[in-house]
Length: 185
Length: 228
Image (cartoon, rainbow over all chains, first blue to last red; front, side, top):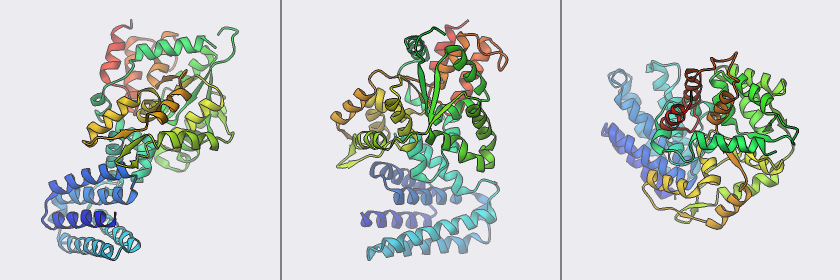
């Protein structure tokens, strides 16, 4: 398992260094799917990092900032150190390095971001919504990604997810069952 | 209300949140009075919808609304322990689908407690706007194919566990906030909260959809087409 985590983080580091935002999004999706199927919160956190790096890479005011170059270098260094720690199967050091990466990304977003809701907060809601789309319940999707369940439910409501999935029993059919049940006490 | 024994509806937090966010919780109150049904929530739902959000400014208003609904008697909070039932339901639902040899943890205490309370109180109606827990008891094959499509992989299922779950909830009527609203509409209970009109109904149904109720636009439109 740790080999798999290492491979993912190396892949993120490599694509981030290449400034390949699209590939980072693909990695985030793939990693989240794997996190859902294996109930793995560390993988979910890695997916979040990939997603946040993808978003940062697309923001012109971020990548044109004089602070970006140093921050980018630090993030790559943290990711490489995280991957390296898994060569010795040191999961504790790996998680610490991931946390340091998250802190670093949050720092950039604090200084250069334009919104009151920070990048990680938004990313947690987005990936929790993806986890729900992948089949998890609202509570489980929120738990896996560290998102607030109410925020998640509100976000899902404004997506087209439920329309794309189609329905089972319609409102009329359920209503008829409800009235029968209420009258049958 | 007939003189028959009181029917109960057990609520998951997703339904209460969708209705309360849509500012139409009083319509639920009117439905409770008119139908004579008991509206019951487990203590975990109270924690999720009231106790925790009361300390979060973004959600405080809704928490205050729901707290008031509980204090006014709209919802009864059942605080009895559910741990044995919770564990049983969790062990069935969260060991039902597999990716390779790995069981997929699909639902969590948030949904499990309402399911457990159904069994504990021998209730027949479950109100849940969330999709996955509903599909597990109603259409597990549909959930499996949805997951396979979304993940792009084949999954395996333990049908004996899924059948046991379906058996546990075999007499259950599952509704969403949309059906509760539709019932209130047909009973002429929208006033004074909302206009008792087709437009009022449409507005209420779409409001809960946009607040996370797992319903499709075409389901709402199909239903509205038959309403005067």
